Each structure stands twice: as C-alpha cells, then as structure tokens.
Image (cartoon, rainbow, N blue to C red; front, side, top):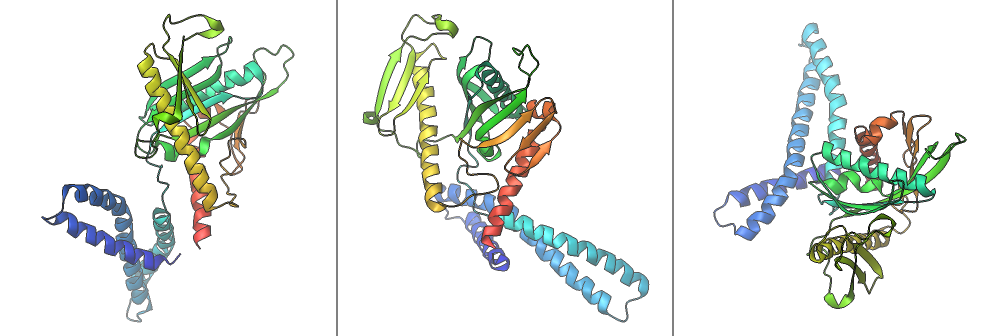
Length: 357
C-alpha cells in the first residue's frame, strides 16, 4: 500500500468535500450524500493531520539533537521526546492504514441472528438457548434493541431454533464473525454418570436487508397460512395466523408464528427472508472476488467449528485465531465477548493489510 499517496488523496478529497458543503449551491440530495462521505473521511483526515504534525515534530527534534550548539540537558529532553515519537508514528500509520481499508458495505447495518441446536439432542438445545441469551445480554450492554422474532422450544426449555432482530449502528460489524458452529463440552444436567458430553449449536448472523438491497417479486413467493401451535402441539391460536413463505427461485423457506396477527407474521417472515437472500447474494459475490481465499478468521462457512466452550475447565477457545479465555462465565454473560470479537476484528484487519502490502 502506498501510504503517502493515499494520505494525499484523502486530504485532497476532504478539502473538496468541506468546500462543497460550505457552498450555497449544493442540492439537498447532493448535500446528504456528500455529508455522509465527509463524516466517513473526518476521522481519517484528523489522523492524517496528527501524523503530519508528529512527523514535523520528529524532524525538528532530529535537527535539534544534531545541532552542536544544543546544550546537553536540552539534547537529553529532545532525545526522549524523539524516541517517544518514533514509537508513536508507526502506530499512527497503522491506525490510518486500517481506516483506509475497504469497508464492508453491510458493517453499519442491523442484523438478523439465527441460533439453532446442532448435534447433541436436548443438551444441544439447552446450549442454543444459552447462546441466544448471551447475545441478548451482549446487545443490552451495547445499547442495541433485541427483538425475538421466532422461537421453537424443546420440552426441557431449550431452543430448537431462535431468531432475533438486533437493531443498532454497527451491529453486523461486531457480530459477523459469530457465524459458525459453536461447540460445548460439559456434563449435562440429564447425565447421571457425570460424563462430559460434546454438543453443538449453529449461529448465523445476517445483515438486515433494506428494500433497496433486495427486491422480492410477489410472483416468486408462495405464501401458506396455517394455525399456530405451541410446544407439544398445543394450540395457541384458533385462527390461521401462522405464515410460511417459500421463495421459489432459491427454495428458501421462512415460517413465522410468534404473533397473533397474520399480517405481523408475514411482515416478520419477509424481513427474515430478505436478510437470507441478501446474505446469499453477499456470499456469492465474496466467493467470486476471492475463490481461494482462506483467512485467519475462517471461511465464513457456517459448517465450520469456530469456538469451543469448555465448562469444566472454565475456558472459551476460538479456533480461528488460537485465542483462549479462562472466563467462561463472563463470556456467557456477554461481558467478555468483546475480547473475542476485538481479537477477531484485529486479525481480519491484519490479514487484509498484509494482502495490500
């Protein structure tokens, strides 16, 4: 990456946008578009300006140190400041390089979270429920809105599957690396012999699609309505309010029955369908862009085992970046999940920087 060329380009564009936005002739539509670009460039431009100042300070200090007329006390102070700047400048350069990385267009979006029980029967369903609660607490800690859209319980209170909408700025950017197979190792409550069992649950995090992202034609949908039912087949509604939508071109099927209103169930089902179609299209484009790319944060394939939660040892291990935390309780409460997510994001950034080098 030619850093200086990119810095000059950013600085030039930032000044162009500032001048355009302060002009009297900017149109309302243009103002909104330019304001968004200006807001995105502002933190980069501020970092570039700091880098320029630090480099200039380092050059001045180097001259002061090299000047024979500088007394020993002043030279010692200058050398101390110079060494501090020599450590700060590379860090600042890397921060700017990260800011200059191409952004995932979906990073600022809200997300649809889908958690499903995998291998392990009742224990897998109980673990799926605990993961769902972990993400709910994590959302609360970040001030995001967490709305459960669909749940399917087992007799022991676990989840066969659960779907939620998580609304907030940058939700997908924080949660997108959570997609995959999560493995749990512990003694189940139903285990009389005290043996450790291994079970799994799958997590899918889909960027929430807007109407402009995915256009769904009515002719491509088959919509069936049926009577909602609760656990064990008990009727919870005497009207045909549950909705099943089949997207005929892809075969994707979405069912929704949590609401008593058929209209509300249909709206929720369409939202989930739109997110799944958008995610499928993103995955297709990603595969076309880099068919052979295999990164430190994994392929993104949801069949991939990404993390193990070992309760007897109190540890959580993310296999994509060889990170292990011995604080399983804080991870499951959502408090320490950021430590894993931050490490995954940093690993992804390092890999993409290496590709551009």
